[in-house]
Image 1 (cartoon, protein in one colour):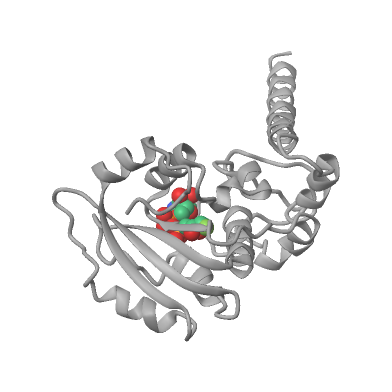
Image 2: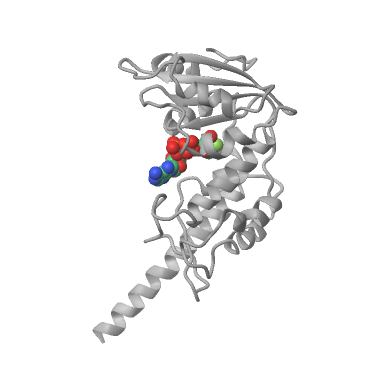
Length: 249
Ligand code: AVW
């Protein structure tokens, strides 16, 4: 009897886990107009369900991104690296910039973890591989695919918020450096402005050597600018939205 109880409890926990995830996916999706969220859920699942959690390549998400392509917003696209919290606190307040996490798929999957298992039709949210545990894990492959599409769609002047409290602020192993920068296309993107967020004891400024690497990585023809902005200033500037959305740095 004890064993049966344990098995039943485990099954209920498993089913609830799945339903919670599906529910989060669909309800976040329904906050956006004009998408068939149930269909998106099906297409999303096909990327990883039934596969071993370290064998989901980036291309597994091709159908998902084809079903819900990233919509470009010229001159408003914000990139970031090692500054997630700061960037979103800022972009939420001003409504001037969008990030990948404001787009449909980015917003639906932000902060979530998921994976499948061989010979199983389920979605798991516990004990999925960590970001660095294996290259082809479902979460990392999704963000690589979505970031590639986000950069590919970028147009006009783009902005990147980087972290001046670390060195190097531009790191070749980041998604920003390895996936996004190489996909900014000079036929569509005319400038990249780095906003380097500094704090009292910051270790990096715009003369940091990694920004030379960044300029080399950039498609020729994209104008590069770098601006150091104090975190305290950024927080103030975000709380006074300016109607023209002109840069406040
Ligand atoms: P990031 P990126 N372990 O701040 O340039 C767990 O380094 O890479 O910025 N999670 C990780 C790890 C890790 N070692 N590394 C990265 N992550 C996850 C999409 C974690 O969720 C946007 F468009 C962390 O918050 C940005 O322009 C997130 O990846 C660009 O890619 C970002 O790592 C930011 O990627």
